[in-house]
Image (cartoon, rainbow, N blue to C red):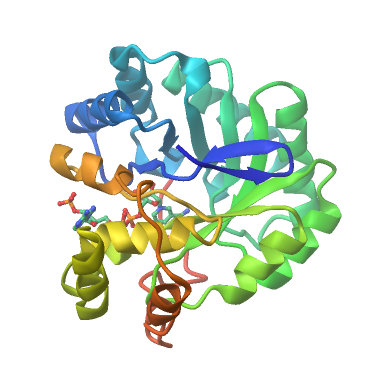
Length: 272
Ligand SMILES: NC(=O)c1ccc[n+]([C@@H]2O[C@H](COP(=O)([O-])OP(=O)(O)OC[C@H]3O[C@@H](n4cnc5c(N)ncnc54)[C@H](OP(=O)(O)O)[C@@H]3O)[C@@H](O)[C@H]2O)c1
């Protein structure tokens, strides 16, 4: 497993996304992923599966300290006291004394950013999280957040795949020593039939998803593909035995298009 280094954190380059994985399926997929070599699991309060993520981790037999666990605070808990309380609630559900990475899930203009970041940094100071970061932050918000936050932010988790140009966010992260963590890294499965990824894959004996994930990892990005299928767990992590050429990387960069975004950016899904 490769790692992305960011402001003191070592983030495994491939992680397991768990959005929409629920109940026993979630626990089973997390357990299997860890047995297959995953060491990075991404959850969130909004996914309503923190309990099952914790169950899966314990069932795997892998030591807690060997796994990088991320959770995210939902936007209705951004008032300072509320943030601390809800972070503790997440830890109770996960049955862990701390997470490796605690993120603000979406920007929330209703609460002053500096106050929320102060509370996030305090959560780290109190030992609730080893590292802190943000998600769905624009370049302007990254710059504002890094100025306002009393502790280093280690990542911005944003949508990133070949159909979406994220050069500006990637550069802003790099400028601030932060990692870009790519969500929806296989474009929610849309890469499956992509002709360019399929053709490049044929040359390397890899699937379009593997080419796509390799392209992300070669940019020093960490990617968190989600799957509910055991066989795809192995597929999505089997990307460390080949390399894309500069020309292949360039061909994949050219797939970006202005309509490539899959998330309605700026709109946080309703959840409370
Ligand atoms: N911070 C945020 O606001 C935010 C937003 C969205 C997502 N996320 C995180 O990022 C994770 C990943 O994003 P995502 O779930 O939106 O999308 P994704 O990982 O790009 O795509 C998941 C979809 O792709 C399919 N898939 C997975 N591996 C595949 C493969 N090798 N070949 C073909 N299809 C494949 C899966 O189907 P099967 O299950 O049938 O394999 C599933 O339908 C989430 O689970 C969540 O942890 C964060």
